[in-house]
Amino acid sequence: MLKKVAIFPFKKVHLAIRSSAKVTGNGSLILGRKWRSEIFKPSQFIMDKRSQLILDGRFLVYTDCNIRVHPNATLRLGSGYINKNSNIQCYNSISIGHNVIISENVVIRDSDNHHVNGVLNQKPIIIKDNVWIGLNVTILNGVTINEGAIVAAGSVVISDVPAKTLVAGCPAKVKKENVDWE
Image (cartoon, rainbow, N blue to C red):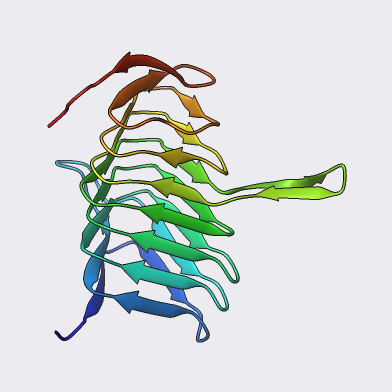
């Protein structure tokens, strides 16, 4: 089977892919699409030197989002979307599975960006299949959000989220188990 990747930027998208960056996989990335009747707002997608983007499905990024894959980092995208005014900063590894819905104003960062006691806290983030992330959520480094989970609006995720649970709060805690969503 022939593998193909495609990136489709809408207007007002700053797309920068350094020559040593790699885009691989089998899928498409649509950048900067407006949400319903919104106007187009500036968005950016930047891949720094030796970074990697792996596409495995159709992933849609709405307008006013900023995504950066920093040097030597890997961003893996399955299928789903991230809504407007969201921010992904990938310094190590971020993996987003299939059928993932990410609401507005979401921040996903796999690094603290500062040394504390001489240590830089930088760990992978894994968001598995069929995950729903609500409005104004922050997801920090070293977290796995397991299959079928829902992260409620306004949550700060600092530890793993079990499968098929609803988590909420700051920090996010399990509020319901055995949840299903469509």
